Length: 112
Image (cartoon, rainbow, N blue to C red; front, top):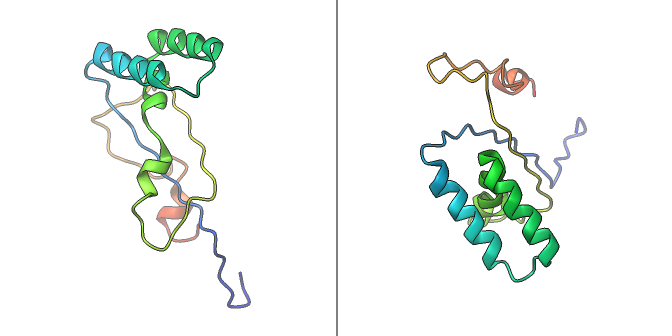
């Protein structure tokens, strides 16, 4: 805001790359979380269980909650959150990090 006002709302961009080192353990944990969720309707529970069996990225999405990242930040309240996960078939863990590749170039150079 150019008139000196500041917004009460701040968009925080977070992007993580996780390495799945034990797919069975990851899938099992997601399956357990889905099974234990009392608010999940049975049909949705079955669909979620099938999805996490087939896709480690979906299993991870069932275990990571953006709310957990910010609950302890003083003076803030989460207004909205969304997240997704996908397998990265072209990721090179040995490559040098490049902000432009992650669409963070504007943030990295201070313009964003």
